[in-house]
Length: 469
Image 1 (cartoon, rainbow, N blue to C red):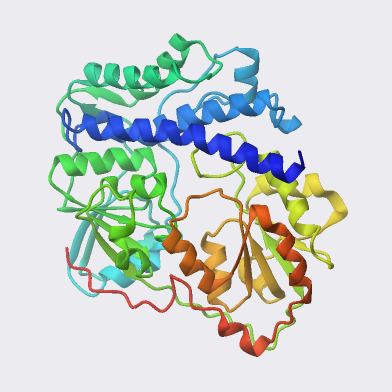
Image 2: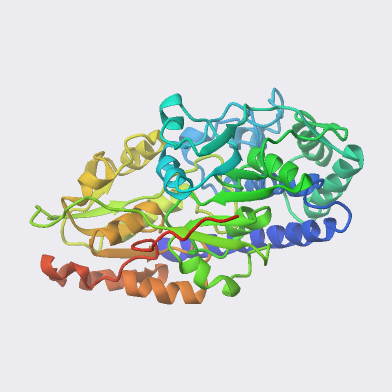
């Protein structure tokens, strides 16, 4: 069996097992809403963490079995959630864990400031915000805007806490019995209970809000989910911002998480809004999708575009989860070799200057390839062809700046067919089992004056709509 065939086989089997877990959990969650509504439902709040706990543990256990763990991570333990590193699973020594949410974690609010200003500064607006903002950023808003920025809280109250925890443990137990997690059942269940009890307590004390709206920057985050649940409990409108330019690209668990509590989902571009009925993973069928554009100021005309540049995705290393989120790290690095071997000229790998995990890529490949740590826009100025295997923000930035793009579909994420058809208008798509098509790329002649034959992306030139809630 070839390396490439083995990568495809491992990918498919991993996603298949994890999707079974996800679908079972989602079914149980929807049924649990008959007992506890959105505002009181502890399972809904911890749903993302339960997925990460189960699928992540199964992924790492399977990677150990198939000898697909980088040497540097074999001795790694995970002190905080999700608790089970490769060393924990292999040694069976589970101790010294720190439970509870990472309350002090700061979100990337900087990128959203202009979005908030553009949407809200035109009218009188009051809202609660689950974010950190500096004094300078707060001063960017007009006097008509009144935002209450919540300090971090580490104690939340739920009714029937013991009963709800027993329900969650029983759901986890059902799935535990069907898969090999490599951990004692009592330990496996006990750790997650301790994780919940660190921040959750029995009681009917309500979370205090100061307006009738809550703004969040991502509801795949469990802390945000708690605040959103408390908002639903108090009848408060939840406005959730998408934080990447790939709005509507995937129909998978992330879309389910982001729309579960949302009354409004603010996205880039109008593709999701115009196709909302086609998505299976949108839980709230009454959700309103709002959209806005992003302006691009970079000028790429008459520049020295002479490099083929590969833009890898962010590496999760020891905290992978599924289904359809990413792929095994060793297989991902091997796949890069398969891709680059088809090009006659040397490929430059663009490493994120602030992502230390991407140093793994350089350590693995050594001097075989060139590397760049320039910022994204500077790299575009010397890029004649961009290669992506994950269509995130940088992918759309490249397309919107008229750079020819090849997208290697390695099945990391779950695309609906109608989205793939749209993507074909934006770039050249090559599936993992047809990499030999890359041979023809070497003869591709790119006329810099005709780069704009690639269609505008899903995220560009969409006018913001009025924001009345």
